[in-house]
Length: 297
Image 1 (cartoon, one colour):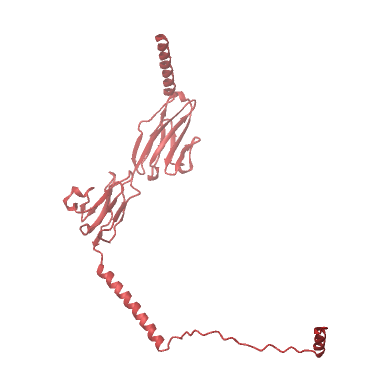
Image 2 (cartoon, one colour):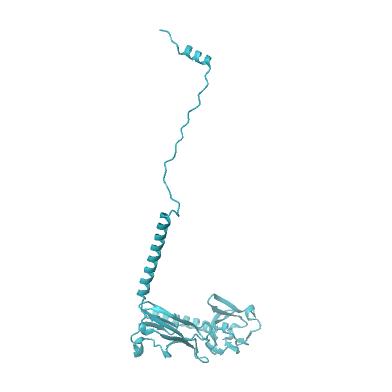
């Protein structure tokens, strides 16, 4: 029984070795699985495969938000990459990269076996002045959101808001000047949300984007004023509307009294009676009627 178990274990180990050898015979290696280069520079994506492939078919694909697109297919670059890339025995070379080339590339090698390798290309683009949204006025107790974004920077930037030139901390409790504020701040998205906003949150706000490439970039400062609800203004508006309605009603009453407006009287419809026309009778018809109407006793 023990001998049979030992033979099964040896057979299983031998089979595992055979599978491992078969798998390793078709393998791909890369000198770097993450390549980071400045925009407009050249870039090499390394993809070296084992000799067991012989003369294989090599394809390159790019993962995009819309799906997978071919970069190198059927031994030639696709239309969007003509004149910008070339395949060499050790990988794929870009003569000049643009910010749109950032992404994850897959090198697929097919022959008697199949293997693939993923390489990430990061095209370095410094941040531009971000697009900022700051409300100029708001009322206490409401929710107010400030947004900041830069879609061109690569890698993706982080954001920092400033109030009166002082950095807004991730949490109000971190700095004494912000302890009376109530907000949430996400540096990865650039969203700063006050809930609720208070008078102490009034000030000049601007946002800065940075990604470690080049210098940080900021948008222009915008002042946000936070005030209480204008109860007096609301009451005044209600009074004015009431007075306008009263004046209009008085004017209509006066015009009606003076006869400037046509009066509307309800009258019963007149019924016209006409005498029906007298039918001409023939004497003979009358005689005939009397004869027909007679009876014998």
